[in-house]
Length: 107
Image (cartoon, rainbow, N blue to C red; front, side, top):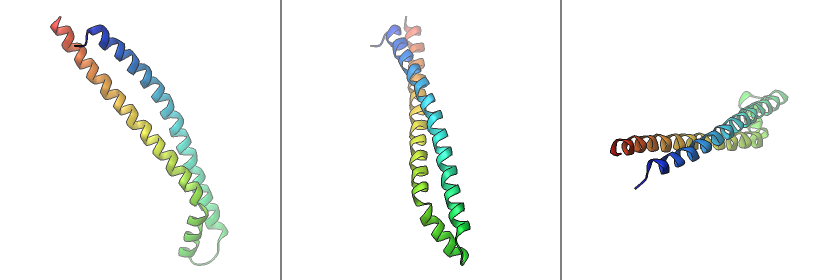
């Protein structure tokens, strides 16, 4: 059985992890935003440099921007994973707070 001290120790650990995860999320969000802007810029530059029918220019611009788009999608996925980690930490903290309240009632 967990004691109030055990729960508080775990809460402190989760709070530290939450702070670190929040900082990481900020960094990853910024990286994803830059990667998205880069991908859009590469696509637009490629599109504008092409000639021919619209569909052909779009397809060629897609090919030209493929690597930048891939980098953006990976950055976006890392950001989403970090967001899920934040949610998981918050859920764990909420569960420990509930346990802590129950332990206080029992004492």
